[in-house]
Length: 390
Image 1 (tube, rainbow, N blue to C red):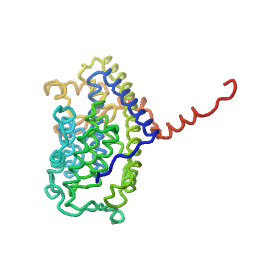
Image 2: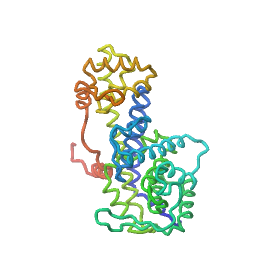
Image 3: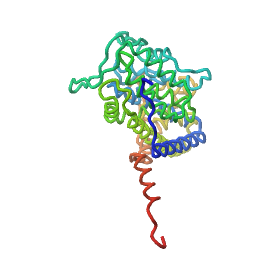
Image 4: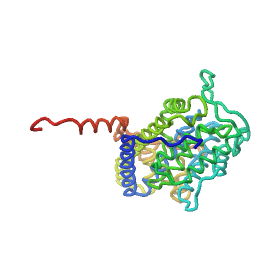
């Protein structure tokens, strides 16, 4: 095999995979036992954070409000034109990934990868969307202007991508998390496009994971985690890559990095779901006590987390008229739950302290453990002899 092969896993790697499976089963159980509108909010926000995280790695920084606006097909609030186009392109590609996750006739194909790339970058023809790069490519450290990676010769790209696609379509003994990690690594190292290779590699990893079907693809992605850990992400790719195309290098450090990312991202989602449960319960009880209609609940929960809201979204989500939407929002403002900003088409709403205080009260901090430290500490505890009488 001329692309990077999956490494042989250690027993502790298998143990970490078991921890990840447990977390995802726990998340799946919680989601299946929550109101549909609640789980929809968690799913939308998870997708928004994935899009935000993946694009931030490339230097395109957008607020959660703008990424949610892109998902909801609204106009941006803050993003500049270039960032907005990048966000929309990635949204289109990720939406297609979500569709493909349920396609019974699906198979990986080089043209699929080219099509996803076109969806991401069609707004900039100079980046050659949907076409393999015609020549050499280098990754440069912008701070030092030093070349940190050189991709394989352009003439090798079609054959290497075909080999990667064949690997992805073939049965494998390795867990899907490992297979997806190897898809990410190989695509990154092949660097088949002139631009957008990192985002494509991360989207491909999510697509491979989505075919497993354990939980929704937006809950399988580690793009949010990578956005929060960009420098370690660069460092591990540099370590495994060694500055050039070296498929003979050991990919085990990369796989362990991805397993850690999956464990910690799953921990974040479980914690976020529990947070949402508490906020949802208190906000909906408050709305009911104040005599607000059920349709107001999701908007108030959204506002409690600090998101900015528009009348258009409230109207469309609830399939109501402009008059009814305006009346509802006005009442929520009068009750001290929302604060209006701006006028006419530029108007939006934010949560008042009576709402944002609820979310702040229930938020739990703390970073997830390193899963390998957790496994080792458990093994050490099991190996320690007990004192007599204990």
